[in-house]
Image 1 (cartoon, rainbow, N blue to C red):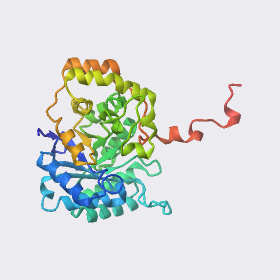
Image 2: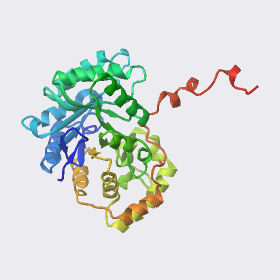
Image 3: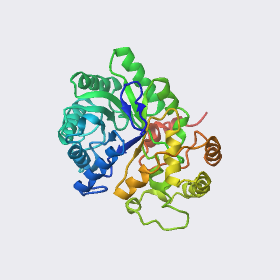
Image 4: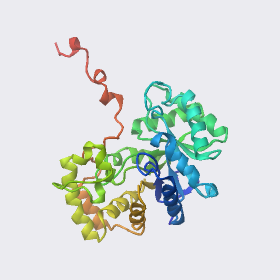
Amino acid sequence: MKYRTLGRTGMKVSPYCLGAMMFGAVGNPDHDDSVRMIHKALDAGINFIDTADMYSYGESEEIVGKALKGRRDSVVLATKARLPMNSDGVDPNMQGASRRWLTRALDDSLRRLGTDHVDLFQIHRPDPDTDIEETLSALTDLVRAGKVRAIGTSSYPASDIVEAQWVAEHHRLQRFRTEQPTYSLLNRGVEREVLPVCERYGMGTLIYSPLAGGMLTGRYRKDQPADTHRSTYGFRYLRDERRLDTVERLIPVAEEAGVSLTHLALAFVISHPGVTSAIIGPRTTEQLDDLLAGDKVTLSDEILDRIDAVVPPGTDVGALDMEYAPPAITEAHLRRRWAGERSAA
């Protein structure tokens, strides 16, 4: 594979990043099979692996750790923390971006991964309850302790990225070097601000859900039942008529390009100059083989123009269930004045 520089970190990574979310109870519970898949990806030239502490509550990291025994030095290893690690929700401090939690979360991740450091430690989602200076200060200490090589974010709005860059410069703290946004043929909203901001600050990007949560695999069609692993979880976006209609319009574009819809989707994402890697998250060896088979696909300007005609640049067709929504959207009191102050007179 060709390799790209991860932002300004100097680390060289493959345009495909192996996502480990499907390794473990949520996806493939067979540890040996998952390890074989990881080895197959590495043998194919992928040198970038992304996981998270909350993927199957640590099981994914344990599987990755098993797979990397004897191969750790040749892999750029990324993990994440921030989301709840207690399934019962009893302890509210087992989550977030506080110094208290991030310090413990990283130590737990390192133990599960069987390593003394990760190359990239990411904040899984913004944490409105924690001051960004607190988070960056904790991450800076983790870098100085040698446990982390670079730090990054996931699903951060452009305004949060800019604020974090300013705080880091003002207080002489480590800067976020990467961002992990969702980006696909169906979700192009990040083209407006997030990707340009990342380019401006020299941040690398790891794209999650380049296949729009599975909708761009060709297995979800309008007026046809879908019998897939993901469909059993009841995700709403899989039944979104607008998204299904758009998929139907994209299939002829893929046929014109002479590629599968899956390969069209991956090639589209990594063709953007602001994208470093697209995260592929196979659950089975067959899925991995199919994803790897598209590594030589190059889209012409004509095909990219056809895509723009179906989904205009900078627009989203619906939204993934797991996309981040800031408090200003999710909390009604932040977008509604007190009843007595809502009238003009």
